[in-house]
Image (tube, rainbow, N blue to C red):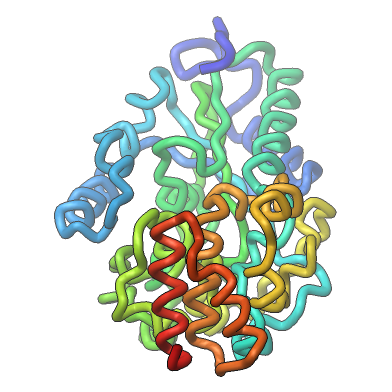
Length: 363
């Protein structure tokens, strides 16, 4: 952990009552732009059993790191010794004024990008705010042991947020809130502070299965069970190889992530837009033309997507994804010409998907 402390831990003498300090931390978090803050203990034993079952079924695909970290993911004290509580936060991400998602997905000449990725890389934004929150706590309590996380280490963030009372796990496996749906980021502070823990919420999905039925590739194989190998978010972001032939036609124009299961969820009618300037739409990515994106050079890709989470997948996978979308789009002279221009691309991965797209257009 980043800081050491002699007092205020579960083994020491607290300067403030656990309930009072927890209330202050939540207030400070809201001042820093988090829509909600909760606190959980570190017992993730039930989630650990589900994780091991999920891994045993191979649903994680080639995300080998999910196995590599072993029980450190489900046992916070193994990842960061001394952890007794986890401060969990959520922050809305939908940019104000972004193009309507359904309209973009209904226009095959445009590419759909998951709404969380339209602006600046959320890792940097949340990590900075979490550090500010930790600094504010330290100013109150004195030095304490902690570490901040934002999707950056083996952390079961959804289960932790559920235990912290931020929501419940939906049938699509994402966290759901009655006040905010699921369109938000999560972040955590592992700490040794003696804080009062919150109580989990009840599940409010009931008999609804809209997220299961809407999934284009059938990736939600059962309530609360996601086969990542079929998930478009996995295929366009995490997966490094060729996208399976049988799944390509089902991806439509989704070139980075997929929001279908969230867009159809009734609880997302309560999702609020984000006022964070860093999450504002950049480069017209809320409704971009596929041909325009496909013609970006690698230099343009690097420059225009600097500071964006999209840049993490690299230029090769970017072209792979767009080639599939162009193959699913109605034939046009511009689309075919763009694909032809990359028929002999140096990357075998790109060439394979370009050839597939051209065959879809009878070329």
